[in-house]
Length: 120
Image (tube, rainbow, N blue to C red):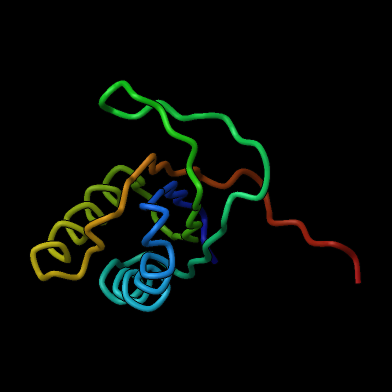
């Protein structure tokens, strides 16, 4: 069972949303599930209400329209992030990345306590 999550916040050009969503669901997530040890599952979400802007590395800010949640198992989140970055760069060299992808943020969180579920 996973012990951490990777949250990836992204945007894309509005006129390319359908293409972006197809690529993310049909190409990118399957590529990462296959090529990055430790990713157990992934699911994407679209922003459905107000959200704060996040500061980008270039100093500008953006509200992420999309969130991908990757359930991961790792004892080394920094090493995991290095590995997923290497794989993503390799996928780019192989023409398997979306040229309109805007990465807003990518962060990992390690689980605290046990997973809790609603009573039956």
